[in-house]
Length: 102
Image (cartoon, rainbow, N blue to C red; front, side, top):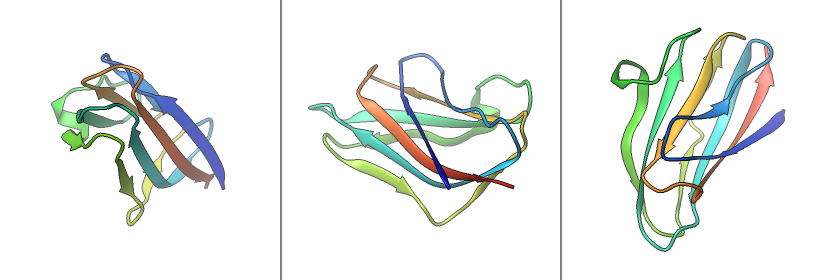
């Protein structure tokens, strides 16, 4: 397993862009801010762009100093696929994930 990290901005930020076919096994979204922040995550097939048609979490509210965890599903990505995210406040949500190549 390997690790990836990204800090979300107020515009679409690349969270994970695999070099080979991969399975994301865990995602942690940690809000380090003193207020709640909303987050949207996109699972994008190939050369697409982030929009409501590929959102996997839409406007998830993460309380101050709290962490949202996804660890019961696996996200299978081809090498051309990627994950992007956006937050209501920049530089306050860190996304940490684990993955394995398949």
